[in-house]
Image (cartoon, rainbow, N blue to C red; front, side, top):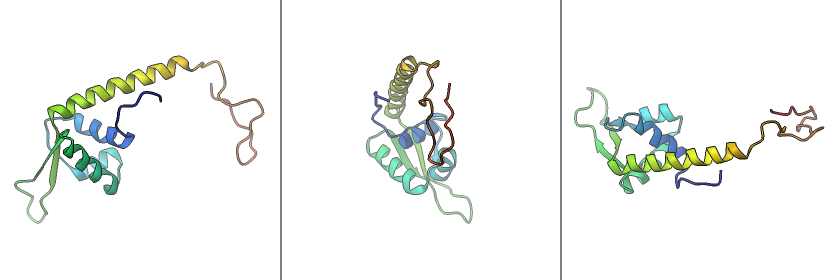
Length: 124
């Protein structure tokens, strides 16, 4: 992919999850489940996005009894704009890549073998 959005794939996953309900506050555990990211990846991303002003964060006002307070996150208007720009850049790059690919040409050379010596299949 030649065009870059300025965000990693993991950051784009977090932004996409937040963009699904941009005005709703989301807690990190729900974002981790939705994106499949581990906490060691997710929370640094959320901190960086908050530092850039793309995400706002706050503590939960009224936690459920017996549960600790949660940190909540949602996109800012700048965050929504960044998601729109990143989406446009990624869509353009995907279209450019699709235009360059020739579906009639196999992706493996004739006689290619995998690591285990099994003949590789050409993908149409």
